[in-house]
Length: 284
Image (cartoon, rainbow, N blue to C red; front, side):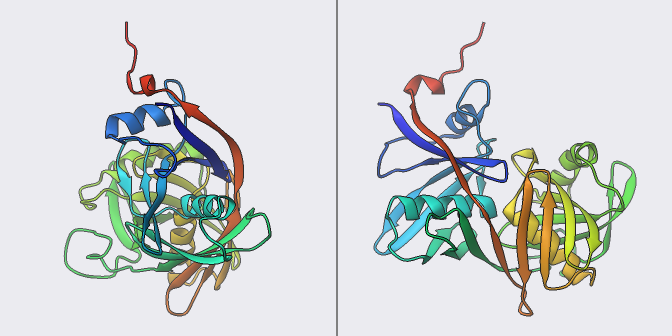
């Protein structure tokens, strides 16, 4: 049977929503890779599978385009919150979503769910929570050797793992050069997301992103929170930070308790259906 989907993006970071209450599909790794492929499939930075209903709870599974499963995604969760509101799975503008990385609180900031705020939870710099190999410690301003060069990095978890590298100058090229080596570095047993960080002033930063399982990305909510959280930990910025990316800007608020809130726009792109034959890649 045909499988229906909706496509949204948050600052160019695009996701497909496949609702198990609408379409029946077995999301194998091979199927996910083909669906997300921009030449052989629909094309996206990932798939949001949900809502999965259990009593009064709403949960979502987040899949990367390489077929792996992510714990959390700031853009993905804002997109999913818009879908829940539009499809009337929720009646209030404040509600919870369960993820592999924990429960998050969503808040619809307007009447049409174009602007959404997410409570992303608390940041941890503790190596065992990220995880990072070696003795238990906060991984803050620590040296990491990448391709023969040493960089000062700060690593953290906000439900998923991140490695933030402050630099004077950042670029897409640099992110693409370092990203694969950082993601798969032996220090990170579960692989890791990477952000190159440039601090503009106490209220503004700029980042370039390499996402675990997705590669170079125009924007990322969890990466924005990670970079802002790392910059705050390093005393480079204040509590409210505008995060600038090639896809646009997100607002991050870092609390004294290490709790992080993320606010930004979401846009619906299109909806449609794909055929079961999408799972078969034609060769020859």
